[in-house]
Image (tube, rainbow, N blue to C red):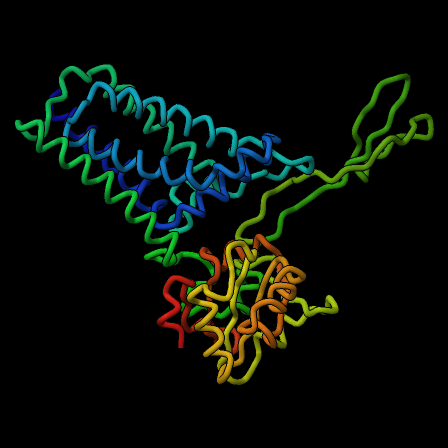
Length: 370
């Protein structure tokens, strides 16, 4: 039993550490996934504003709790907390697995459990959480038998506290300077135009049309080939998912660049012959002429072709009237969700060679823009 508990303890601890670290690489990704759940539950906008700090704390807690479980520091408390956390995760993944839209399609393609670097579909995530739940219950039942890894309590405490400091430090860094490992479709080296196309092995979803008729106060569905006689009254027609497809979505969706007249200029921009820059601005909060990256743009625009991509073109144009450094730079509009995926910081600068991303930087590292 001692060996079994040792293995379970390390397995659960390492899984929580791995899960926390892979999401800590991109806490904004988890934040956006939380917003999807809050939208599905019609939560007030106040909760949406809290998703980023919630994501940061949750990622850090997974790492801290995993380390605490392995070293055996305050084991009674952390096993209880881990059990509560995995129960919560199991509920979320169960909801993501079975929640459907009106047409029968799933509301969620993934639950964000392992971030963008290791995407799992809801069923895989739910299965993983069921296994973790069982293992966590075993640890809870035999928690009195778990001994600290080191005899000195201060050593165990120091390791846990150090892991917590590291968890928060990593997330501070990536929120300021972009993720260490870029697992998004807009990463360095990717060709954006090709990723806007369906994969060659895509299998589309199969749908069927069902007709709803009523007779004598009773409603019934019929297929197109088995419609009822004229004594029935037509009520409605609906599309029903019959068979789920596979790999049938492009990696990049909703990335459409529009000019001031609303024309789609994505193809022409991404086929520019010489190297050029795309400056992604989700919004204009906190930007003024003294911002370091604004001063860098003033130098860069003298010799380089720069396009601003934003979800708020009117606000950016108004801002450029106040900030000379931004004046004269072409402004393109784009869907805010696409910008959130492409640019994890405000701003993010892409250096492009036609449709290929050859480099990307955050605003905090503007001294390296070239």
